[in-house]
Length: 226
Image 1: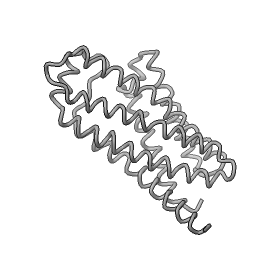
Image 2: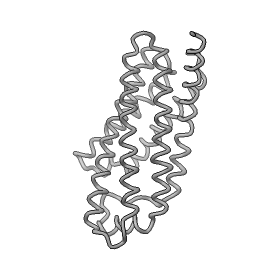
Image 3: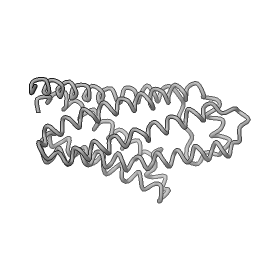
């Protein structure tokens, strides 16, 4: 029975690690399927034109970088929870927080993808103001997801710090990615172009988060015996 449980845990770790490594691949493919989305300063007419002109590309993008990405996230979070829980031992408190916050990211990704898919199907004579309003609401909702991501990264990093599951450099990378997500989330209130998701800072933090996910996946694949 114990051997069976260990085998199942090893498989879970490996699937989670593979999902993490594939995460940036789907992200990159998704970016290539549709042009750069509108900026916060775009007019309602520009937003409507973007979704109606690029409807096919946006639909493909939401499927690849939205729904499929969300499924990879579930595999990653599940495998990571098992990995950290084994490293923490009986307490496993922080790994449980990481698991819960990781699952909480999933509905945000799916909701954003579904909203963009719906906007991609609006007719060209739709009310531009209404389309713009829906798009802006989805953008602000996506910003709140950055706080959940920050909690997820923070809990994972603290659990790994306590259990020694990650190398020190990965703990630092997690701390940087966590802080970056928290700062981006404050854009809801500050409305600063310098820290928005469209800014250089936002792009840098996206790269940091993606690099962290991949690095965690590689560690999971290499330390399945933990």
